[in-house]
Image 1 (spheres, rainbow, N blue to C red):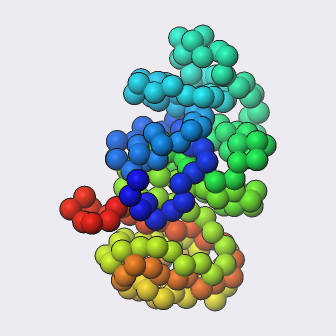
Image 2 (cartoon, rainbow, N blue to C red):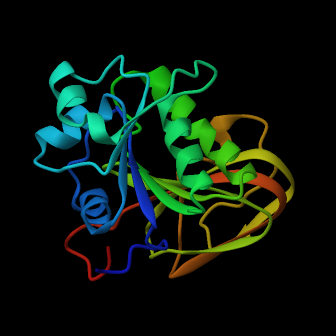
Length: 216
């Protein structure tokens, strides 16, 4: 597998958003030895010709046929205090799995998309290393000073959650402690890596490289 700019996961969570079509999330999905689907996300996953190891949720959006067909791997959870994505992450956490990827968490309803992305900070608090992949790029939640692999021209957005003294090296535009979401968007990497210096927590979004380049 080509260099994906993040560590390959121990497991993949499939959400109930738009099923991926880009080769990178599909490559990560198909290379994983453990896939757990969030309730209705199993419908799209199964329609794509794949078979989930587990399905978790309250079953409200899982088709009747799939609930019957995969009854032996359906993990029922009626907890209404959190969503199925978090139920899947907590299940993997209980099994000692810490490095995961999430696909199909965006698209469809915008409020679900925002909620799913914001939950990356909660998973960070759990000690999880989570990468959320879309058809355009990927999100990670981190804390403190971090160096990120990149390529020249890679589009980068940084969302400061709780930061102090934020600054950067290797990005086209300087960073600072943001007071609004939009302020850290539409930045650009200048080379093969960039560093964000700060205290606190933040989200980083990076785009994939175009197919006509030597790197993903």
